[in-house]
Length: 260
Image (cartoon, rainbow, N blue to C red; front, side, top):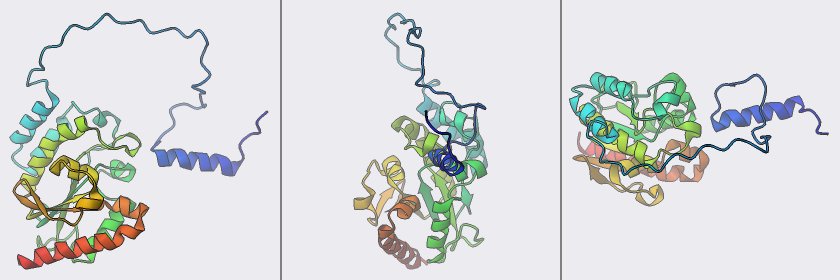
């Protein structure tokens, strides 16, 4: 017979589940999902589905997103359009829409990947451990998200405005649905420079992955200079990459000073 869990083991298991993304308990007692009846009823097979016709533009999630984003004439309208968008399943499991933080009109706009647990709870991007590291990194080159002066401010958002379950990577379908909103977001915020942090943002905007190879190499997208960088969360996992992040920050600083 197995012995009952001691206090320390139970606490460690709870911490592990929180790390995986669990935020609340659904039942009072645990359920063993492997203890199923041997003669469990089988799901009835549905008849073969007929050939599907092309999806009408008003039902295609990407087409709907494109139309909604194009109709937004300012950032408030874009946030409202995202909040009203019902085609992304991530919205149903998220606590909050995570739209943006910082100063619109800042010279630098940072585009991350997706909200984590802290961001989902607070409704702002980059507020957890990775966000705290990002703030320290930006401060080293004189940038702050709360600065009033556009010269020293940053504007921050993500590819996805809703947290994926267990912080998994966004699917290609989710990225495709959100990309029209992201492109419109960049156009309305009107930064001089776009910083892409992590593989997901590079995949969405540039169509490329492999952040280790492409980081620090200036490119262009949507008519703006683009600098790929390591995501702060990745730097927390691999501190030896901080030297590359520092080199990229200096490159960003030099680019900004060259235009002043």
